Length: 510
Image (cartoon, rainbow, N blue to C red; front, side):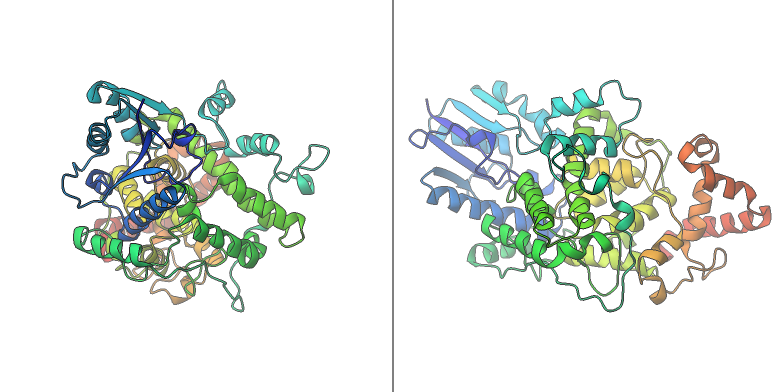
């Protein structure tokens, strides 16, 4: 029985469940570049370049291993523009009566795939994505009956399950589960940042760059300076470089921000991990080995591993447990339109200009920039969740809805009302000043709360708390800050809220 095995653009691993029992004699592997997947949101140019180039390189890797590959390029004659349409063409072309595919990680496509068997008139076998360390039914079993779903407790279960950073007695290395308190050092002037691995585009990648410049010229971001890994071997090189040169200081400075460098000591491998070029277990094992060999401190290894087996696995579980209505929640009734400077970077706020500018240029910003700068602004300004989520999906090379939506909708803008985080991560300019050097180069004064030169974060923060006072007074984790709001002089609060109203009335001029 001839079978077509469809590989999606974020499934670029030979370990995919859809390839588990492949018969090289009868089966064909299908990879298809389709307009629908490039434009369901208008992805950053560099993300499209990365995905299409990585797909083409993966096809070459499979062919070198002796597999029959049917590769459809974006502008090939007859390309239907959809995955279902290309699956239908491939089934007919190869006289196959069976399609095997690993379920999509995004709800919209996974739901569509449920209809394919009927629509295509053949047996369509949808397989679970077993690249993750926690199966979805395992997550649901852990979550069942809990009043609150908190990553910290899930993370401890994942540590026990995987044995990462566990001692011989089944206790966490160092006597505690989480070393986050050691991971909040502000940036120092004398630090030397190693930077991520960079790769010169080969002929395949250059062809894709030309394609993207032609077909997606109106998409956000720069295509110039594309240096991403596009093969498994390159991605593994990028991981080794991080482990050797950046992991030792990653823990200390993982929350820091600076005008001097967009990457600091971060791994910048999430793009490769989410697309299948790297394996999550192997990535964590590399960090653990660095700790065991004395090449990285415990707080660095633990903090890095937590991002993968903690946050990454947790938000995936949340996504599939809470969808599809999760996406439509707007607990704080936020309706303010997204300001234009989210696309242009043209703002006098140094922290926002830095985060948006490097996002435009590199399709990258690290987690604190996403949470405590752009996300924090979206939260305290009450920006519309649909527009905020659309922005995050468009601008980052590692963005897929299963990972983006809970992190943005839940963690950053608290639109889910506390499913992901027990309290909103709202902050004034003081946090940004403490963790970065942005404020010293800003047109606004982080020390001022009112007046035209005051940092917008300051007024918006207190206005946000005042707008939602009744709700947040009931939140146990916000007791101290809400009492501070209560104690604030009424005239000062009025002036602060007037400053916030002025900002919100003309956001594009901030």
